[in-house]
Image (cartoon, rainbow, N blue to C red; front, side):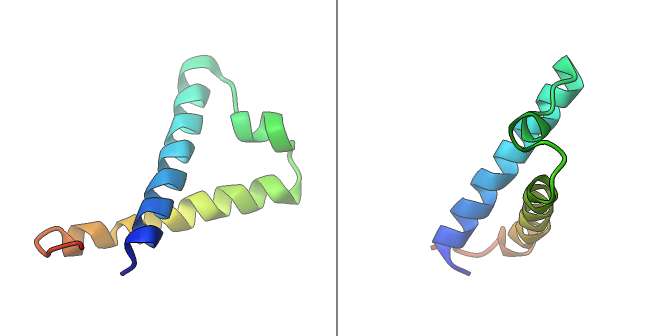
Length: 67
């Protein structure tokens, strides 16, 4: 796969994880704060979820050279 896609998916997943951390520690949902409960927020959640699923491929490629 593309290294750029890997980095993008990882970055989006980290942002999603930070949002979950904010929810867990401070009960503050940054996505809902910025975008409300609109369709755009749902799209953002879906993209984060897809990136997380894509990152499962890291397990299969962990023994391979990822250049």
